[in-house]
Picture 1 (cartoon, rainbow, N blue to C red):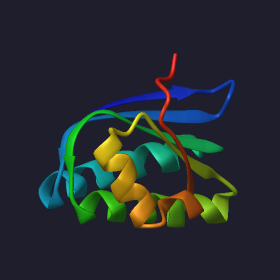
Picture 2: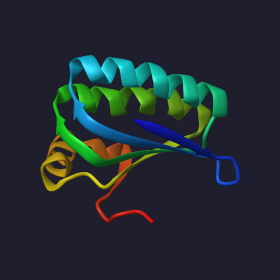
Picture 3: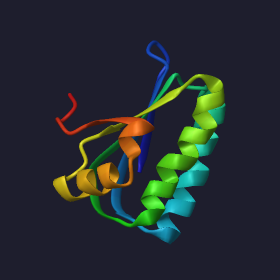
Length: 106
């Protein structure tokens, strides 16, 4: 996982990779939460381009970050999920919490 904060846009970009299972999601939550509280972004972008597997822990990861950002007035955007992960996100209703964009970002 890589984190990048753009101060001009107040965006925190998180480039996720590998598998988002229970163990990995717990580690990612801590790292992402630390960065969110440090930067207080207006937008948290979770890029799923290099994610190869996701179980319900990935849904929990998104929901938890949503609960942190909402009182701050922030929002979540999900970019580049595979077709499979995009389906899982939509079936879980994540489009109600976050904008899901399947096109590759620049």
